Amino acid sequence: HLRIRLVQRKGVKQNRLIPAPQQIGKEKATLLMLVRNRELSDALKSMRAMEDRFNRKFRYPWVFLNDEPFTHDFINYTTGMASGKTYYGSIKKDQWSIPHHIDQDKVKVNMEKLVSKNVIYAGSMSYRHMCRYNSGFFYRHPLLADYQWYWRVEPGVDYYCDIDYDVFEFMRTHDKMYGFVMAMYEYQVTIETLWDTTKEFIRTHPQYLASNNSLDFFVDNHPPTKAGEKEITGDYNLCHFWSNFEIANLGFWRSQAYQDYFSYLDSVGGFFYERWGDAPVHSLAVGLFLPKSKVHHFGDIGYRHPPYSRCPQDVESHLSGRCLCSRRDHFDDDGYSCLPRWWNVAGQNVGAGIKLMD
Ligand code: GDP
Ligand code: MN
Image (cartoon, rainbow, N blue to C red):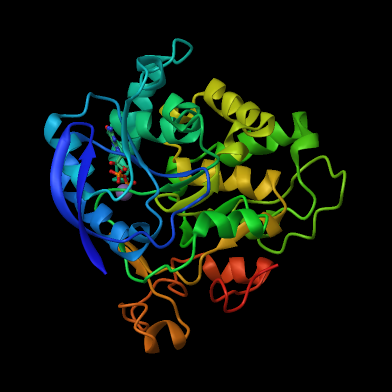
């Protein structure tokens, strides 16, 4: 049954048709978007898909973060699209600027070198701030203080399948800390020294290396890590979880292990001297500090972040009408996808309720 409700949110008054509530999300969770004002229409597109496919059933709140103040338009339109409450936060200046210990001349020289190699975002300073913020600061934002879980959403993405269960509840009840959908190779020139820096960090903080970690996802033919092992060996194959989609536990980023790791990475300056992405940084931390059983591949979620999409492969997801995407045109076993490696180290799962990974 549909009934008309008068919805009042932060001064935005409107008449909307909203289905009677059946199931409201009970987890301490939020949908999280870091976004610029000029990305409003892409932000709305992502929200529409997220609301239609998942959130209208659960009405989790949205948190929007920006390094600049949000415009009234941005606030009004996104609040209008949300089925849950909306919150808008700005980012502290020192979390979006070059720290004092960084040698700005070296940054400039290295940036020019990277530009000459034609790497995407090579010449962008704001991109570096964004990657550093997503690596080390988002989880400390005051608006996230009361949450345990977040689902990262970016402007301009699409979700292809109805998600009929509460993904946050799933994460909690299955003892998961980090969920992803796509995995791929990073551009080597953007992370020249990230792997050596990470090895050095583990050498000085061996207590953070989890047993049953995912080293064999990052290093080809890596033997299983033994408990109490103090060093990591081998070359990084550049595999990482694509972090524009994340369903994860904020407690992991707030842990001593991760905060020490981020501080170390930040101290050596690779976010500026190179162009370290938050994706490999998150991935290496998740893969090294957590047992692989706490990492979940959401095989039942169809997702697009240009230029790549992936679509659930099982028959039922399509026969039931749950998903609308092409099973043939998918990224999972593309030559550029690392998912087959993940299946090798963790087993293949199709989706929640279909076959679960342990
Ligand atoms: P890509 O996915 O690596 O191509 O990078 P995006 O341009 O999508 O940026 C990643 C995320 O950070 C998206 O949610 C963007 O909206 C956001 N973002 C990127 N740069 C900025 C910025 O300068 N300011 C703000 N507020 N958000 C940004
Ligand atoms: Mn993006």
